[in-house]
Image (cartoon, rainbow, N blue to C red; front, side, top):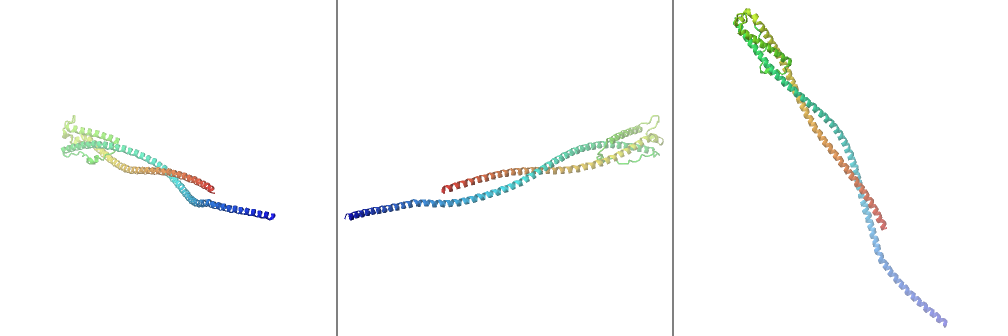
Length: 352
């Protein structure tokens, strides 16, 4: 009996323990359910955050890929621009070198042109002096021709007196002076004496003196009788007195007339030569004027070339500045790309 009671007590105690353990198990299960619900409540936002971060990561990767492709395209464009600028700079440098060579050549040509202009100016001054000398010679020739005209007038009066004496003698056998070989010089012939030399002027003065002496002798013989002859003007032209009183002055007048005719012929030849020389100088002056105009136009073209060279140099300097700016932009873009890559890596590491 005692054993049964003890067994019964142990069974009751065991059942009590079992019920207590079952209650503990149910409480643990409820606590586990609560913990599972709490875990789910806390896990869902984390999962949502993870999904959001994954979406952000994918979006960042896409954005970075687009940015990287854009930067790469810009870098390629900048590299192409830099290459094209380098080519343009080389071409501009070649153009500048060629322009400098052309400028040097043009400077040499300008110096040659200036030398030619100075030479032409000197020639023009020489021609002006020669024209002034020719003008002075023409004036001297006019004076000489006027003097020769006076001499010829004196000879004409002498011839008229001699003819009157022959007429008074009534057709004596005295020889007649030859007729004048050349007519009286007119104004056109006077203007023709352009280059009378000093020797001719001296000879003309000597002839003028001889003519004046002849005229004075003739006038003295025609007005006054000779000493010791006792004859009048008509007896001076008698057949016996013609050879002694009129033969010497007539021969001298004839020789003076021939000399004057020769001088007039020489003056005409010198005038023709002076006129030809004047025409040549005029033609040369026209040619030099045309050449001077051409040289002036060439100088204007040279100034245009100098302005073009300055413009090319300015463009070259501008292109160098642009190339420097593009190089700085490329360096800045490369630095930005490096910084963006490092920031992206840091962000990925922080996310992971």
